[in-house]
Length: 217
Image (cartoon, rainbow, N blue to C red; front, side, top):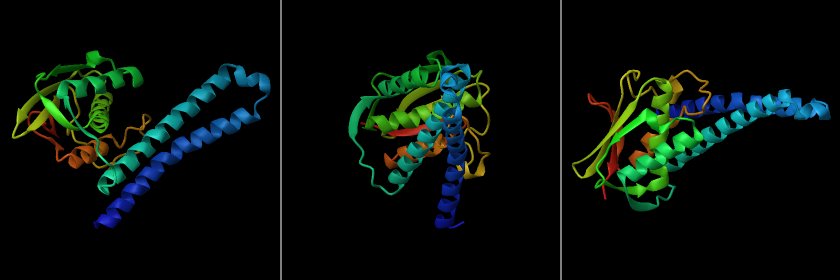
């Protein structure tokens, strides 16, 4: 498949993913508009509002992830390079997952030296890491995921693994997967691949687990 056809298929997939939450949000707002004033503050209205908010958050995530990936591919997104410890990077990702996505830190175990220093765009790297961690955690709700960090060949390597995680660890490209991820995290692995590639790193599946290669300061 040519690059143009592949990207067209990818864009078509993303458009399809956005269509469902958009329809939910529009239906919810339309229903609220047609309700009597006294009904807009009751339990039914609360459920409708919650459904609309979930749909809008899913849309926002899909849109943000898609355009971040595109800007990275086109090399028009300026990276704000800085040095930070790998542990600080992981802590930031885990804190977000606990506070925003309801994934407790107890789901994750870390073994990373405090001397491992990563250089890159901190916010983008955190987004990449938490996208992969969330995808893996939701794929295996009972699994405890471990992150082991080490330095090798001038880079920082994080290995993610856990009992009960589905194989293969690397999912198929988004356009080859079933649609309808309710969390809107369907582009998580693509985002991670694009972010790490922009930093000269990468993500791959090995015998040890899922390997993330990051630039070392």
